[in-house]
Image (cartoon, one colour):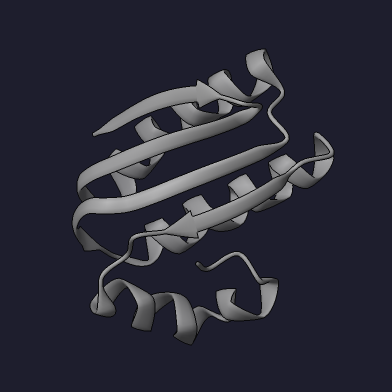
Length: 100
């Protein structure tokens, strides 16, 4: 569901499978714990392995955006499918400048 890698002050979370209410809570717990411990300059959420996402994924991204701002860092979201991009675009995430 989520694997993390920390390198050069960047914490990358490789997400996989389906992101719904239950899985988003598990991902959130894992990513938040790593970010609190490591205090990275940048958190990168990699959606390459995500096959499905509902609005819980938008909440996941928004929450990590707020958390990283509180920690003095930034957020980047990358490797998402066209379908997931449409969900992000409809939610207004494009305006945050986190989509790559």
